[in-house]
Amino acid sequence: MASYLLIESRDPFESNDVGYFYDLARDLAEGGNQVTMLLVQNGVLAARPSQPATRLSALAKLGVRVLADDFSLRERGIKKVADGIAPSAIDVVVDHLEAGHKAMWH
Image (cartoon, rainbow, N blue to C red; front, side, top):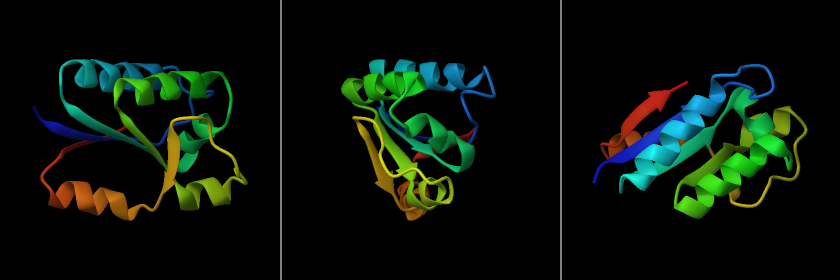
């Protein structure tokens, strides 16, 4: 079992390929891997209670740890996130890299 950190910086309302990254997280989790998805920059727009957030909440139910960068949330005026998504400091990236997790940035 491998550990992955997937960092999503794109807005799902603006870029159609964000869904493929969500699918990658699902496939990795279903394959028995430990997966954390961190939403940063415009990627946090999907953390708001909305249609794209339902996909993220579904990932969380599969065991994917879904985090949203707290600075990016504040910068975009987002005060509430959907179920299964937790605000987090960007320091989590360093923690994952230090632990040897495989990281991918989209």
